[in-house]
Structure formats: structure tokens, C-alpha cells
Image (cartoon, rainbow, N blue to C red; front, side, top):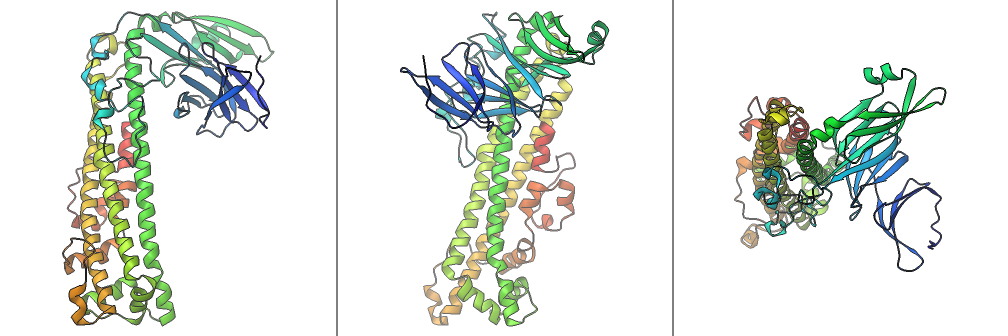
Length: 503
């Protein structure tokens, strides 16, 4: 019926979507393709699914009934969830210690409407960051309210459709049931007393699936002598608590995406800042070459301090400012560093802080549910959620501290570059020409600020300490005093550690 042209790679696995004309192919290079049956006699390749795992793909399962999501299992025990429409990997979860050998989705539809707290009319849903047609990037400066018309992620069937999907993943010693593919709601352990008492000679699980009504799990197991057993397990507890589990799983999905966005924003922000600082330092590192050529035993800081105090430059510094780092080069560097500071402040206040605020709202909803008996009975712990909310609040406080440090550092940078470019201008012109000098920014030259900048930030970057060190080390660092950062003992140590504490 359909013939594809030569694709140049051996196909090792293929998986039909049971409800749509889509085919998933895995080749010998471990690439995963999604193809659609064309109107003629050929295939159309839609997406290549790029996973964070470099391990071999062991199984693939389309989510039913909509086919909008696809899960891939890997040899390293991880399971990835992909959005079929975009090809983006949403999650990669290391659920299993051994290779995942089997995946299967189960879905239940046409269920009674859940509590009104989770209806599409919920006001916060209309301001959710999980927008259907919007990918938030780290270089966004604002979150556009006009884009917030979608109420739910397309990968979660909306509550109006009343569909609840559970992914069953099977490894040698464990079978895990995950709501929406990322939130574990139950598992079967090979070493469990129930399994061992029933069939003590079972060596591994081979496959499993959950019935459509969630009342029964079917498991295929084998022994070391290659005997196979079919186990039917009563999972009616999942069916009885399906609505509660669905509500918690939906919130968990949104929280997981928000945490993933925070991780992405923080990682990109840190990398961009480190690249800017590295470029800044490399420009001035060349000065050591001039010192060796002149046979001098001083340093850049010492020669700049001498220039600040006397207005006289040594031969090495004169050569550096007049030939190596010309006035135009220094001006470009000043604008680059100012742009880096501005970008970091925008990410802190425009992306990270708003994302964590949305996270706090989701956690608050769960904490409210934790007061209800039916949610307490399935393990929703109000104390754990309280700690999560406190950690998220600490993360926001650290963002404010970072923003304050960036503001102070940016001010020092502007004053330093204003001063040094004026010195460069003076080295090239006579005193009567100084009136023609054009400032590169609006900063007023303050020699005390220039002095502090050269004594501290030319050697150590306080912002990098906030991004990568814990608070104890930051408090011990002398440079933190000049920024007057009011660190509290109860606040998490650093942004990465604060994010980990929320997770």
C-alpha cells in the first residue's frame, strides 16, 4: 500500500499509533522518527524525537486515545515522554534501576466530573505558564498575558474531556504505573511479599498492562527455567481513588513542567553569565603578556590603581590601552557587560520569579487538598507541601538578592568603564581636547567606586558565587559585605540548591 524511499539506516523497531495514521520508527543509530501515511503511496516524516538519553531504545508506546504523546523506554532504565506535535522531550525519568523492557498506556474516559477546583473555569488556569502554543525561552523579557488563552497543556487531556492516562513501565524487577507518564501512582516490586509467597521462583517481569477501568493489572513473569506465568492483580484501589489521583497527577504534571522551566532558565542564565565574565576576563588577561615584554613584576590591578591615584600609566598599561584594547574595543566590551547584566535581571524578574510564583500557586492548591480526608488517605502530606512552599519562597528571596547584587555590580561596571575610557581618551589627546570627550554611559565617575571594583570584582565575581556556591561560603566571602546582602539563616544556600530543595 505504501512504499517509503530508501532512508539509509536499518530500521530496528516500528510502532503503529493505534488511533491515528502515524508510525514510529527506531533505526540502528538509535534515532526515533515519527512518520505519517501520506495521501499517495509514500510516507511523510513529521518529527525526529531527540532524547536526553544516549542509551538504546528498548520499547515505544503511543498514548491512547489521542496519540498526542509518545513514551520511549531505554536500556539505562529511563523513560522519556515526548510531545508528538513539537518533537520536544518533556520528561526523562530514571524510574528503573534496570533496563525498561515494556511500555503500555491505559486510558479511562467518560468519568464523573471532578471537583470544581480543577475545572477549566478556574481563574488561575487562564494565566497558566503551560500555554499550548507558546514556548518560553530564556531570552524572553516578559511573559505575554495575551498569549494565555489556553487553559491546559495539550499533553494532559483537559478535565472537560474527562480522560485519565496511565503509563505502565516494566523492568526486570519492577512494574511502575505513572499517571500522565510522569507521576507514579503505584508499583509492583518483584521482591514484594505477595509476589514471593505466590510464586517464589519468579525471576523477572516481562510485560504488564492495566485494564481500562483500572481494576485489574495483568503481568507476565518468567522464571530462570524459562517458565512463564500470567498474574492477575487486583488494582481496584486505583479505580476507587481515580479522581483524587487524577487531580494530584494533573497538578504534579504542571509543577514538573514549571520546575523544568526553572531549571532551563537558571542553567541558561548561568551559562550566559559565565560566558560574559569569561570574555571580560580574557580581554584583560592579555595584559600579562605586556608585563613580560616590559620585564615588569607588577599586576593589572596594581597598575590600574597607580593610574587611578596619579593619572600616570606605566609603559605596559599605556601599550595595552592604546594598542591592544583600543577605545572602541573597550566601549564594545562595556556595552556587552551592561547587556549581560540587563539580561540577567530580566530573567530573574521576568521569567524565573513569575514561574516560581505560578509554582507556588500550584503547591498552594495541593496544600488545600491535603486538608481533605480523601487526599490524606492516599498520602498527600500537608507538611511536605509546606516545606516545598517554604523552599519556593526562599528561591524567590534569593532571586531578589541576586538582582540586588547584579544592580550593584552593573553600577560599578558602568563607573569603571566610564573612567577607563576617559583615561584612554586622555592618553591620545592633549588636555585642551578633554572637553570633546563623549561619555559612553550616564554614570558619574566616582573614584571610590572604581577603587572597590578593582579591589574586588576584577579578581572575584560575587554573582557567580550566588549562582554556584552555597550561602555559607558566600557569607564568609569578604566581598559580600560591600553589597549589604541581608542573608537569613533559614534561606537556602544558592539558587541551584534552592531549586533542588523544591524538587
